[in-house]
Image 1 (tube, rainbow, N blue to C red):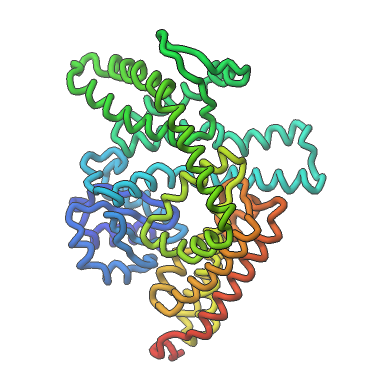
Image 2 (tube, rainbow, N blue to C red; image 1 turned 180 degrees about the horizontal axis):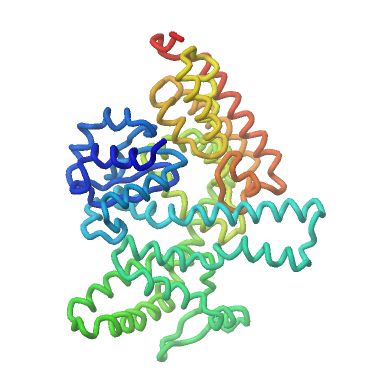
Length: 450
């Protein structure tokens, strides 16, 4: 695939660089915000026919072009062609309501996923190595590897602050500094020593541990964006570079420490506890529902709403249970696509289905979802059935993960632990059921030709 040529054809088909307001990418898709979306809608079939494009979707106020595993390289070519810094481009946030909410979540969390996935994989491998006695947790090697696996979680507020600033249109470096301040060793030392009741200019507050926290920094940077814009509105340009960051930090940091931080952490803990309570009472029901519906959430982009809950679970409990349910949904898509592969006669369809099955098992479901499941709509029932059964199993045995990773197999180490057997059973049953039901349900007669 000629990535430069692909980028040129996509840019032209969505209306050229003049029609592109902003563009970002996730793990498999280019996500355009267009000035005139109707142009891309009219060219939808043409875009789908471009070599290297797996499909298109128009969700959450974004025109999404599904590329697959090569999306980051194609994104770089698109960025070079349009010559824009999409994250800081003014006017890119004209969406409202849920569209804007999920756009913000995706913009903040998606760029961090590779780092979290890599760290989660290592954390899972360390669990395996120590469980089988292949490495002692007292060795220097283990200590260094454990720091590598923990760093992204320990310093998560800095990463979130930087990305949040880009979405909220404020200075990313000042925002990252806010995150670093919350994690400063002096503050961490106070908490470790139990000196949490302190004051600032006579205002008492409780110092919190902000490592791995999510809500405080997100709310804080959102508020900081308004503070910064207010200061800039009257600050002389000659003084802006020094005094705007100074005043912003002097205002927002105490506000986070005194008000937002304690309330944010309390809210995050309540969110995690609320989900844990619901999950503990109706584990198999919650598992079956999310396992079945997860691929549909991906279609709409609403799956990003799960990321903060997963991160909060990891922060609060040291483990998460949602990723296994998502793995059931991913596996269901891979299984259904494999069933189509076994059934169809068309060589071209077989090739697409086989490659989509492999990528789906690794953890990238979009190729199968858009090139097979959506095309052969009966397979959606196979996905729902298989995902529900797999989610039921995962929920029944409360399968846990210690970090993030591609699922079902690409990030297998994050599931190492006392529930790994049930995870393997869950994804195996899901794959088989989805494949069998897809094979039985069949496919359009037009695909019978070789």
